[in-house]
Length: 318
Ligand code: ZN
Image (cartoon, rainbow, N blue to C red; front, side):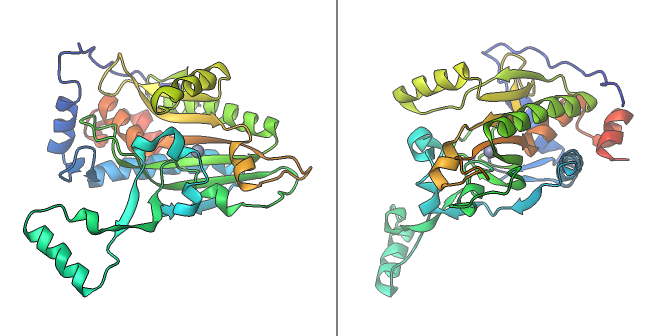
């Protein structure tokens, strides 16, 4: 096993400085990210994507020991499933709904007249049957609805694009990004063991990649006044850990991985049972693939061919 490599520390930045601009501009200049006209929306250049793909392979290898089922989700899922999750109650400001035009000729002409007259045409759209996926494992649970699992429960390896409506100048806060997740459905102990295993595994992998990571007890950004209580509960019960690393700011390091124990929330919502007939508990570990690439480019330089040999070896970048 290799030792963690040394890393270059980020420069501390005061709040009056543009924390995100210099790194974002450098990424764009190197064609690692290509801006798409909206804050937080980018195409990925070839070298950026290569790093993402190679990290993804490291994650695959780490998960292979458990031989998980593999599922790859599209970036949208059924609205009727979305509304059975608590997302609309807890994170209404982050959701993404897909609208379309469902009128006839006459309505179409009216819509085009509005468009050409620079009037608001979006009001002529109606919601479709799909919502954008807000978290990597959400589309999984409806597929297990009203099932009783075999002894030992299930392990699922998922990946997909995640949407969060939070336009930002921070290159690490994209509106659409990929999450690689390993999800466990089983007994409370199986779920907890899974979370703790991956927390340790994640720290080990990032250490080998020369990233100065730390684990922190975290909370989700629950919405509004009621959300304060949920944040406090989540922290008090230590349901969520994050692995953080400085990307643009040392004061506010960025989460590149999260390890979550959901109790029986999803098992109860979708009637998922263990072999003993108990409501399944679930846990997931998520790797934010774009953020991990951004952390690597920040700490080792914008050209991966010049990264420390050990980092290139771990990622098999040659
Ligand atoms: Zn998840």
